[in-house]
Figure (tube, one colour):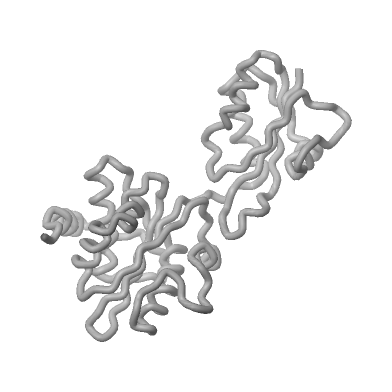
Length: 255
């Protein structure tokens, strides 16, 4: 049975003037618009936040959809082709999570129906950790070759902006004075252990995160102990994350 409620919602969105916020130079097809609105309709029905369109993911999806159409078959990675995270990074996406659905069928309704009936593809559509998506559909010989990419976007922040966000979280967790960030704090962030500088902290927490919206539980526990009166936050470039984006931060606590 075709998902008639999804089709009705899709056309209702179109009647309200729903458009995809694509980048300049990108033009989405009716099939792409259908699949994007259909996936968000599935999410909204289950009280999940709808995803937003991502121009960088669209470039990544376009590259792979063209490959599938050229070869006349579907795959998540062809011989000699970069894997998904590399394609996303090369297209300019910054993410902590990335996933992909692929399909081949005569029309977009069948493609979405196939994805929802496949546990793995359905899980990608209903993944609460992703917040962006893009779909590219290429027609060849009467078939549609579709790529649906998802990610959780990591916002590009300067080191100072990262430090400011974490400092606010620290102050929310405890009554503590935040000292000005120093080069020693940033060097400490880059170190695997120990600390830089002459003043010895009582506790150092280094962590890597895709979002700076909460502190690690171990750090919250330390802050809640009441032993510390001052803190310094130092950020440093993330390393060892390959194609994934993240923030590296160190929090130094003093009595």
